[in-house]
Length: 160
Image (tube, rainbow, N blue to C red; front, side, top):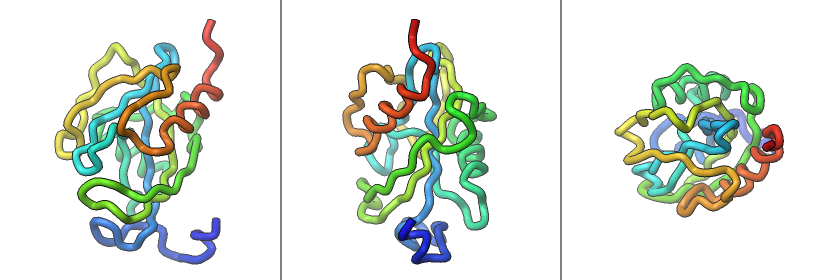
C-alpha cells in the first residue's frame, strides 16, 4: 500500500526493470482434483515458476493474467479454482539474468488437468511439470511459493 501511495506508475515501461518496482500477474495452473500445480522452468530466472508476466500500461491485472495464460499456455483460462481475484500478493527482488529489481506480483489461479499436456512458451520456459500441492516443496522456486501452496491448500475443498 505504501508503494501505491508513493507512485502513479505501477507498470513496467522499459525492459527489464523500469520502473522498479512494477506490477506482475502470475497465473498458476491448478488441478484441484489431482491436487497439483503446473510450473515451468523459467529460462531467465532459472527457477520453477508459474506462468505470467508484466501488467501492460493501462491493463487491468486480471486481463494481464488472461493474456499471459493464452500466450504462455495456449489456453483460455478458467478462473473457477479460487475465484477471479488473486489468491495472494507478494513483493520479491528478482534473480537470474535481470536480477535486482522488485516485482509486485498478484497470484491468480486457473483450472488445469494434470493428465493433459500444456506446451509452454519456449521463449520463456525450458520445461514444465506438475508438482503435488501436498508436498509443499518445490526446489528452486519463487521464495513465496510454499506460502502460496499453504493458501491454495486452505482454499481448496477438503480431500475425501
